[in-house]
Amino acid sequence: MNKLLFTIGLLFISSVSLMAQEMMNGIVKDVSGKPLSGVKVSKVGAFRNSNVTNEDGLFSLLLEEGDYIELNYADIAIKRIKVTGNALDLVFDIKKDAVVDLGFLKRTEDTQTQSVTAIYADLLEKNATSPDRMNNALFGLISGLHLTQTVGWGANAVMNIRGRGGLGNGEPLVLVDGFERGLTNMTIEEIESVQVLKDGAATALMGARGANGVILVNTKRGMYNSFDVDVNYRHGFDFPINRPEMADAYTYAMAQNEALYYDGLPLQYTKRDLERFKDGTSPNYHPNVNWYEEGTRNFSEKKPV
Image (tube, rainbow, N blue to C red):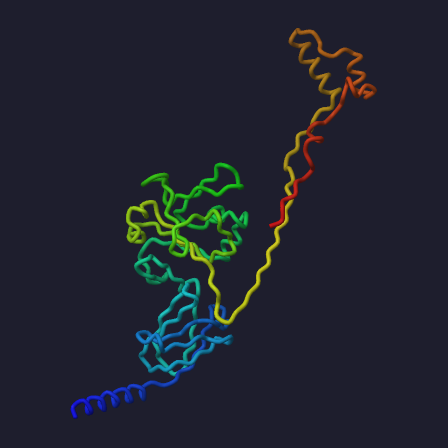
């Protein structure tokens, strides 16, 4: 009998709770007012009570006033909002609400206290000098990140965070999607964001491995109900900026004789030699060849990538 009364009581409480909730409609937009599709909207504490925005940014969720909902966009941006009305018009700033994953916790720009700087794909692609030189694309974009280029743009730059120091060669720990690996075999197009952890509070989980700082690289993810195809084609030409003006054989021979004369030495070329260099009647014994022109082209063509 007691069990029956207890069961009836639970059912009564559940029904009262459900009656307090109602189906609320909302729309999620970005900062420019464009609807965002593929944003997961869920009730905090009851994540099975969730919905995903459609192509118009609309969603419906069983909520009551005072609940908190969480917006999650492809696990790269999260925002928590309190329900204050029956209609929800939400603005989601993907960059401002971007998540910094420190390993043991996640923070957004508004809530983090650690020294972390993040940049995103659009800025990387604008700054890139080569599609497969990830390190070089970071030049001048992140405060505290020093890059040293010593062997030309054909190789990746050496990275240091807040100067060289600490263990080993001073290079930071690089984690790509949580796994340790280098950036050598990565392309700019597959990068979603780069986060640089610069102080002890940010790198605490890594221990001694994070003594030189940590670089977190997040690759791009597929978006709900979307399909994008990007095609890039690069074709370049190199032109010399300054080209030396080479003297012809007659001018060179005259200058050589003049230098020997003022040094008090015998002349190297006779008057007959000079005439042959000038009129070109003896190309085999008195050639006049511009080897710079013979050995180089006016431009070089880069391979398409």
